[in-house]
Image 1 (cartoon, rainbow, N blue to C red):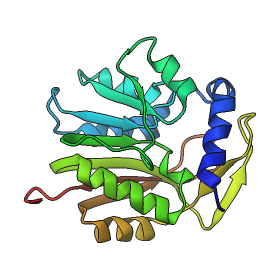
Image 2: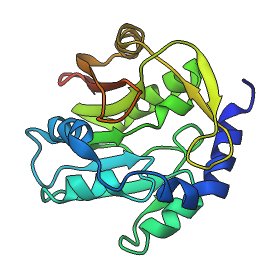
Image 3: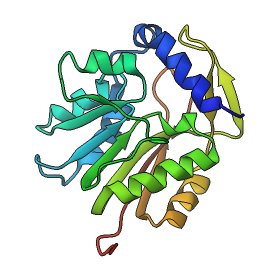
Image 4: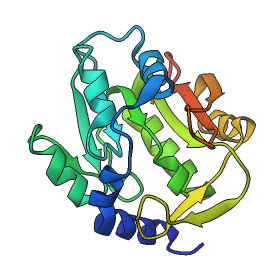
Length: 207
């Protein structure tokens, strides 16, 4: 699957309007529950980074709780939309760009599922470095086996990599994450089973 991520980004860049049109605007209880668990115990001044904000649905839910989310996406089309309400939104590719540090929480919904195994490890390691000690990386993947190309939502084909809970939590443990909390859920009307993961950088981590 050489250059799969590049082709997937091109599909988003050319099809972000179709993505928005064909993605339900109501996020539903599965995502709302995951976001609630992600922010549990955080003060409203927590430093939060979202990787893959798309047009800002998840950030809007989090910010309704009084937080501010740094919104980023690797797709310039999405960022242009985000900047209409948040001029600080910016283009960020977690695989190729440097990440700032000092975050209490990094969120990423349905982004790592577009990365192959080595890219997933790279992204998770970079996010580990970007977290404060005690900070949390919270993300979602699709459960399954293998990899595939899908051309749903009226878009050009996008690459998907599927995971099991055991495989992704093992990878995170090898990087150094602790207090791993994962569960699966299925949104109403969906045939996909989602893996929701919260992983913490150790409180006593010393560089």
